[in-house]
Length: 248
Length: 252
Figure 1 (cartoon, rainbow over the protein chains, first blue to last red):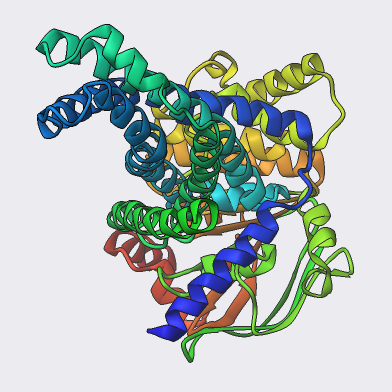
Figure 2 (cartoon, one colour):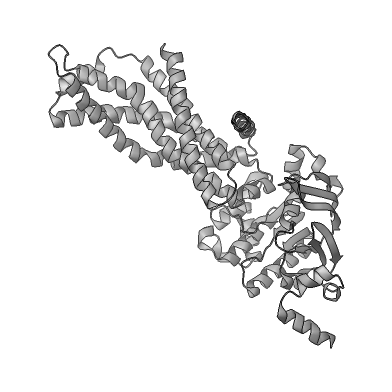
């Protein structure tokens, strides 16, 4: 078991070394990069918007329910929603959701290319297939995911306010006061640092599973599932490590 | 010209190719035939470096491919065109983009020149109006023809075809075979075709190599193959009752 673990770790880093090799032609890679921004980033926006709005709302209602005491000011609801969304929900939970959506997309796309010999065709042409297929995806995820998370933060906090108001658990004044109360800008730095690391994990680990797919359609499905599982576990592990490093 | 010297390849101790030596001439269609599972595709993948050989030499005009560094191999591969069994067209790109891809990647051609070249290659395979279609919108024969167009777009010196007419009807198969022969002569390429289709052998087999028991079993041309006294090759050729009856009639 340990041998297999180190085998995969070694192969992953060898793959990364080839991924980070000098591209054959920047203009072709640039085109692929913008295509991936659209494919991996923009198409994730609707699901992130919906989840963020409702999660923000649920956090607000739960906080209001939990702080149902004369000793806790009502603005603490806004304060709690803000910190929950910025520190954990947007960077971590959204990354877990992206691991499911984007990770399976990358693994199945590259896996299908492998079993239909498209990767062999690239190699025969003299293209560094690892770099051509994986580098634009990593670059796109690392660049676009922080923007998605920032949008998620805004929508989460907005959803908390809108549905909190609708449910009648808080007033606008109390909520906005709570959101502004003792705001620490380092929390944003912490959240975005985590997001960048998670984005790299999502793109590279999923690509690894897709690239080394062998067999048929069944194996592509398995690679896709493995990619999501490993990405999710790694996100949780690195969430702990980064939190220890940045907040302790 | 491509020369193979004592190529050996095995998977988990099972020999796929043993001491395989032969040469493939420029401007000719060289066919490798054999039963399914006889190691034809593995041999082809060994030649182009997609599968590592255990021992032996693969010489492209005297340059040993196996002794090259990765950069040299990458450069040599720019001289290679390959037609895969399933076409291996890029699903996310249109037919025209598929053909333009190697040109955009490795040449200094302008966009206009790339488009013109793609148009020429498409017209060469009789698919002038298919440029805007996606691979999923093409039939099996069209996919193979687009794959040929993509393979010849960068003017390769070597063309490899892995079962170019598998899954095609006899008429389309012959069309593809003729196309391969024509472009081989036209562009003076060294072409190696893997097949187990006897129609292809008779149509374009200027040099034919028969693989059996993981070895080169017989070597000849489409003119000599029917008169062979090699038992294994006879079994391979006259596997159908129809051909056997024809042969018996001819002998009488």
